[in-house]
Image (cartoon, rainbow, N blue to C red; front, top):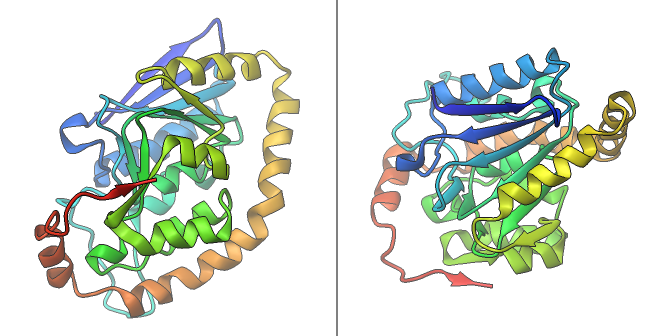
Amino acid sequence: MALRIEREAAAGVALVTLDRPARLNAIDLETAAELAALWQELRYDENVRAAVLTGAGTRAFCTGIDRAATVPQPPSPYAVDDPLLRIGPKANDLWKPVIAAVEGMACGGAFYLLGEAEFVVASREATFFDPHTTYGMVSAYEAIAMAQRMPYGEVARMSLMGTAERVSAERAYAVGLVSEVTEPGGAVAAALRSAAVIAGHPTDAVQGTVRAVWSAKEAARTQAMAHAPALIALGNLPPDRQAELFGARGASGEPRVR
């Protein structure tokens, strides 16, 4: 199992932990399936009224798709299979609030999860970045997810700069990606406190509010995501060239943190 789930029945809160610290909590196909199944399970668990999502260890919240994962693709240039499209709570029709607690790096495919959380709590040492362009890939779904949370210029800069620049927790707070910054090691505790408050409210009102807030951005997001497969198919380098660029990572020096 790549997930660890702790349910606090008295508080009505579930703590969900991506438990692959040796792989920086990267998501392989098994983890993607486990996440989808968990969100669907929580729809029916009346004892869980809110959830906190985090990553094991202090190095990373999540670093997106596991580079070792093999993802079969259809032969058509008009179709791209992306296993991360089903890993978020909203993609699985879960309307109980989910709070993300970030320690360390959150990058690439991590934005599929952050984009479907109600809000994000981050340690002061957390950093956010999008490596796609550096490795010859289109940032489509990730950039779309962040465009719902950050100003256009901030999303464009993070997506286009690739690994050359990382957004600090303080900067993420300033532009609205993060709602609370904690001391190192404190993100989960802070997120659990907020989740317990929310779980103490009447659940129908809470879930209705989640739906209302989500609906405010859902139409634009859905329309943008419809264009993503074609943009990825047209703009991505072949996998072997991507692997070559990934293997040469670090050659350009330390990334700038702002």
